[in-house]
Each structure stands twice: as C-alpha cells, then as structure tokens.
Length: 73
Image (cartoon, rainbow, N blue to C red; front, side, top):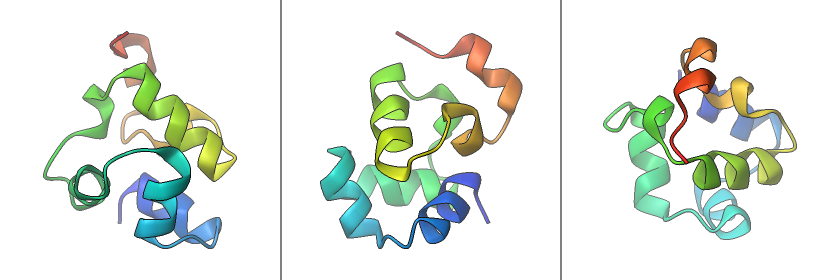
C-alpha cells in the first residue's frame, strides 16, 4: 500500500474527500495511490496541498523520503 493511501486512511478520508480538500484531481490521486504515477515526481504545490489536507509532512506521503531533495517547484 502506498504511503499516500496509508496517510489518507489514517486521516479517515475517502479519495474523493481528499481530492476535494486538497484540490488535487481525483484521478491523479488514484494514480498516485495505485503507483501508476510516481508521487515522488509531483510538483511541490501538489505535495503541499496533499500534506496540508492530511495534516502530515510531505516526506510522509513520498515513497522515497530522500526524493524530497528532488521535488519539482
């Protein structure tokens, strides 16, 4: 299970609720959770929005915590 999905479940949110609260497209969120798209390559704005909605740090939703050094701006 992806770190994003784990964080979402811990926060008690559905995918649609997280999409709405974060402003991240529902389908994109699904792709990140399923590993279709690599969340480690997401824009900082996307990661920040998800982390805010989940009340966690960005490194907690990345699959490779070292990837935070390579986050795109």
